[in-house]
Image (cartoon, rainbow, N blue to C red):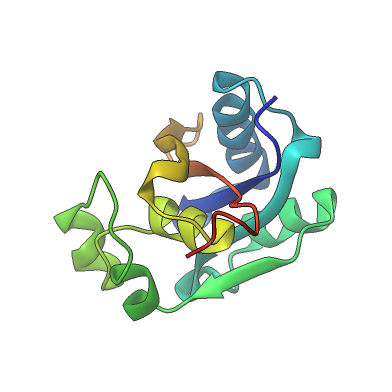
Length: 138
């Protein structure tokens, strides 16, 4: 049992909810977690109007938190990307968002940057972090 986890979510513009949901399902399964373990979810503020993300959050009853590129860029991550930085202003969306949502440092990252491409060619990226207990929080 992993305990409560936080998701960091990223996707190409126009990615269907089903593709994002498949990516999350794969990421959770890879660590033996289930949908009920998800206690928080976050992304970049550029995705605040992303229909697929919003639909997934509604379906699962999550309140999505959105962070600015500057907030995300301040989080140390294992897989920074210059390509992501070029498009978003931060080297990481999913890993940094998961860590911010979890209130934890890099050691809490359980799934690093899991990418899934749907049949339509659009990508979803999911990272999963263990939510810090009150005693572990910095």
